[in-house]
Amino acid sequence: MNVTLRQLRAFIAVARAGSVTEAALRLHITQSALSGLIKDLESNLGVQMLHRTTRKLQLSGAGEVFLPMAERILQDLGMALDAVSDLRELRTGTVRIAVPQVMACTVMPEIMAAFARKYPGIRVRLQDSMVESVLGRLTSGDVDLAIGPERDASAHVVARALFTLPFLAVLPPGHPLTQKQRVAWSDLVRYPVISLQGEYTQLLSAELYASPGRIEFSPTHEVAFLTTALSMVEHGLGVTTCLPYAGVLLQRQKLEFRPLVTPVLSRRFQVWLNKDRGLSPSAQEFLDFLMQYVEDNPAPEVRAFRKAG
Image (cartoon, rainbow, N blue to C red):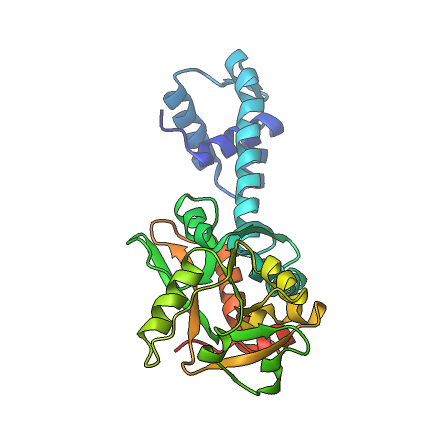
């Protein structure tokens, strides 16, 4: 069957008006065009939908059954088109993002709040994750966007540079290294170092050993979360390293930090997208908003960010 929306609208208009003349006026078409649409509908359905008398049109038995269904079809279509329009105009929608746990409790809430003020109808669902799990959430389809430090990704993932940040030494108040304006890695490793498990420590160890000083990075403790490492530093169990966006956590725990030099190491952060799935209008708008926010926002947690080249 090749029933068209124009045929449905014509049938509903005639059924409600009881007159081709009146229905044609409501639809702003000629009577002959309207009659043709009704004839085509009946031909497609294989049944007579209207009984024609000298005075008016009446619904047949099939027409009485079909009328509420036809009206529901047009109503559902209208609701669907309204929903698409809302998405297009960014009045509604959902964006799902995965970010590392530390970023999730420092920078992202502020960005989400700023986005919500501009687009109150769009919901941003945040999945705070281990760094090693962020990319997996994207490739599995759990999220629309993922943010994290540069990593090797599959051919199905597109990466966009977000910012590049240098490493900082995190020290308890009164520590001997607080007397320095900058701390060399070779000085840091003379003290008990608390580091993060997995690629964080593996990459640091490889980079430091490949540096001119061939620095050996062998942490005394390795933990899963930076918040654990910071608490251990606060209680005098050692020193640790972090990136500037964790600054708000350092302030809360009254820890001190110094730039790490000789060598200066940094981490490039990226936004990852799934190449095989296009972004919804809401997700695209959040991505654009995020990139601009990192560039422009003067908040202390974001001020240290430097746009990657």
